[in-house]
Length: 79
Image (cartoon, rainbow, N blue to C red; front, side, top):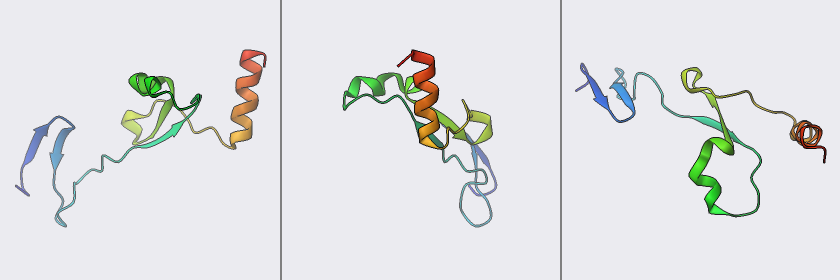
């Protein structure tokens, strides 16, 4: 197994010599525009989260500091 590449639902997986995946699949995401605790928001995750890493899955840049994100949204919505 450690010398082969496997096609899986998460893409091609290959193991490194230490037993971990040769290429990490851990995502770093930033949530935004979450309103209350309505679970329906999670059905369309792209509307409330931005993938930051890994680069091949990146959908946007981090908004930092959060106060800037609030100002940007207020300017866009007029609120």
